[in-house]
Length: 300
Image (cartoon, rainbow, N blue to C red; front, side, top):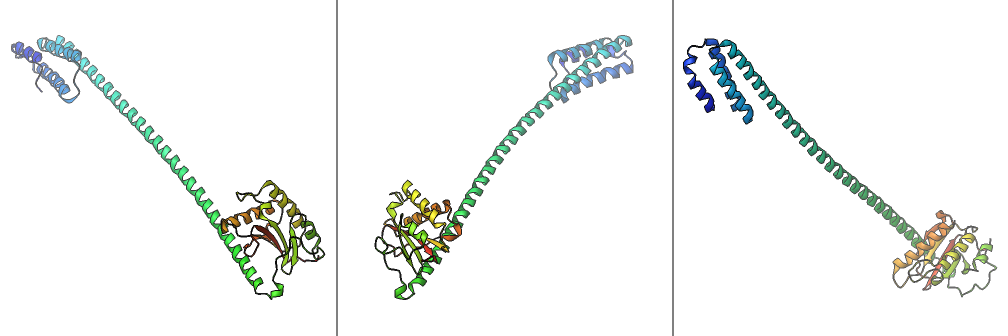
């Protein structure tokens, strides 16, 4: 970079004097010129006011180089102004660095917040998937359990069908011919249902519409009827209580839903869960439900 025109002009005007200056003074002046030239070339632009002061001091040094005392004063002023320029640049550099660091901190803060939000979403998704998986496993296990119970009861009924004709249960009239063959709890059940004793146990039969409404849900009256029946069943000696519902016009699923509703109601009302099971309603009169008390003594 070229020296400033004012500096070059000053040097030309004082050139005759340079010849009479001592070598040390001339070298010091040249070093000061080089320092300013280097400062202009190597750093950010020097503010106009600061540059003007430095150039003015160089002119004074050029003029006073024949007088060592004045030259030293001028040189001290130049050095002070150069030190001030260095401090300005250092302060500007620090300010710029601080601004960059603040920008980086803000950027990292935004990234951290974004990662926190993403992490929260992933945890929510994981929790949702885990809950859904647990519910699915529970439902699958319950369905499998119901299938096993239905298969066991179907096998049980198939074994009954293989018995001699005299042992096969025949439909009963609306009321049992006599209650003398029924146990005491069976007689109590006749208040709420048709009850008859057979070789495979005690049959407790009710019309489905006495328990359910049109939406396959237990009605309040149906709940009260099952609650009363549950109190009596808890006094029975039945090894197993099979819940059967005749096939519905809406299909086997509707019958299964009704049977499950009856089973849950009995369970809620204190009938031991280990004695309750679902069984197929095949063979029952249409529109009927039945509780079969297996291995219950017909005379005790």
